Image (cartoon, rainbow, N blue to C red):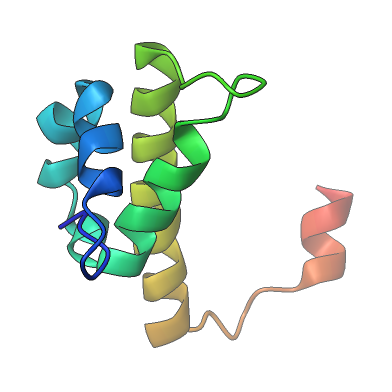
Length: 90
């Protein structure tokens, strides 16, 4: 999932952060190779050049998975009754 063509460095980076293989692979959104590779690339240098902590990795994984699920649903089933002005006022 994390291999980028002949480049196996993203695989090494992903397995350096154990929460990626232990948690991310269970999320549906990580079946998308570019997303998986891109997130590893970002997480490996998240903290001023140092890799993300376990807590950060888990939070990013949950957030991305939830965001993509919600975005997909919104794209498939648009709520025509949503009034942005009313939502902002609320």
